[in-house]
Length: 130
Length: 268
Image (cartoon, rainbow over all chains, first blue to last red):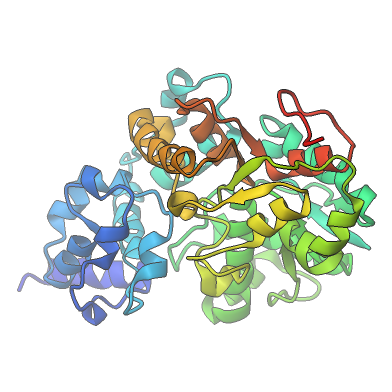
């Protein structure tokens, strides 16, 4: 096994606090995810792939930016694996790198409309950029 | 009773009604919301990373200001409530986060999560009491079928938020009964509206909100209430059924006879 890949898994586990080995593959996280059909890799696949050190595809996936952080999977996981925290950790691994922000303030202007609440902007910037 | 109050960024701008109606109503119900001096935006989303420290500081500063004022802290916005309450939980239970935050802030008295955080709805239920509220209602929403929209942040994660049963909540339904309305229970009331993804991908939010609205309409809701400005935005923007979406404080102020609510007659 490639040492680099093991280091990535350990980093994700450290940031998220998630123990992927607790997962029993029931799929409830994906079943309850409001965005599962827009995700290339579903929440249960995030858990499974991190466990198998298949992290590279996750780092490149657009699925990272589809997660709503709605805590549905965190709340409903029967084994307290809490996949949403894992998705967040993988996203942080990407956007913490120099020049890898998914959203920058100058990209926001054309996305605004008159009624959009400030909450949408601060939340999106928190999730998509560092 | 006076509470420290954290309004949050949106309540000073796009969601002024949520804030103003909360303050107006509180005076009528016998408690005062004292806005924290120089509060800072909570960030809108709880930073889930265990090594995230800087993004939790604004919440801790608000919690410390309330502690130093010897008051409990009240929030109205679902997102502010979620972020501040989860950060408070970290300060109580995560030694590593608490140590780093305290090392950075260098407070006279270190903070370890001692402030109690309440959502305005909890004040109505647990301090004022829905029975007392019902007696103070002057213009009830009699016969009005009102759906509660909890969304995601008010209830989850339930082991931290501890507001209500996260899968079968009743706090907003009880509130609706107290103001004379008829609560409409529908399955999607605690599923996400699409949240902040609306900024980048409005179509995604349209699908999420559309499912909520369809379900509410199907069960006969004439209007929906929420505590979250982002839910209000996503639902109202994507409504194809003519369902108005109001903040719960707007209905509260209306029921107490404090304010007119455009397009919503009282039940008399």
